[in-house]
Image (tube, rainbow, N blue to C red; front, side):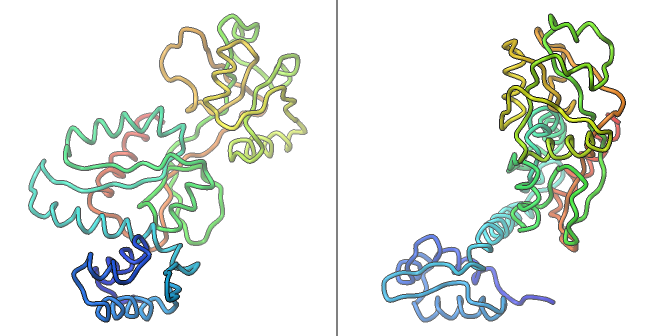
Length: 300
């Protein structure tokens, strides 16, 4: 189903939302109030549902209107960016890439790819939402971002997943910890030591617990935190050991920390690109995603 609306209809909607007043919005857009109202009515007719609730003194969004706000903002920003982009040629091409990315990938891997990409396309800007797995998927589904980098395995008929790499769970410990002397470990080897883990609401924790349960194994933790980076801080302070994805650990030689593989079973998470089914990407996002896939392939 196609929706027939104009850029000015979207600008009218966003202006009313931000100013919470039809009179001020009409002045800001240099429109009469009747013309502004017609713009809003046309958009609501195209959508098929009310987007704004009007009273004599106040304007607020409906539930659907609130859901549309981040999508409309992104569409308008991409449109405005495209107006400048058409004047650019060759290596000066500009644009905006908006993505949702797992914090671990955003911190340890994404900057390398962006640096490589920016050397070729210096005028392309990036908006990166570094979000946990569930929030990142929702951002993609709502259209707030063009695509995401996320854990695969979630079932959503409206999303398309494309595998990038396997990211194994490893032990993180201080170099002076007894387990650091081992080249590889089994899960039972962790039992005598204080274990630092992330909260049960984490997608990583859910995946790990489910995989271990299949082998009748369960982690007994002493410290539970919200962020993987916090768990590494506690490990570095000598409070215990942690199990976390390899991608969440320092990729270069670290003065205090080491990682060790854990076998029987070996557990990993699959990292992939997530897109909306039937959605389209901007030329800038297409180019970046192509480089991203190629760079991941080289690491695999």
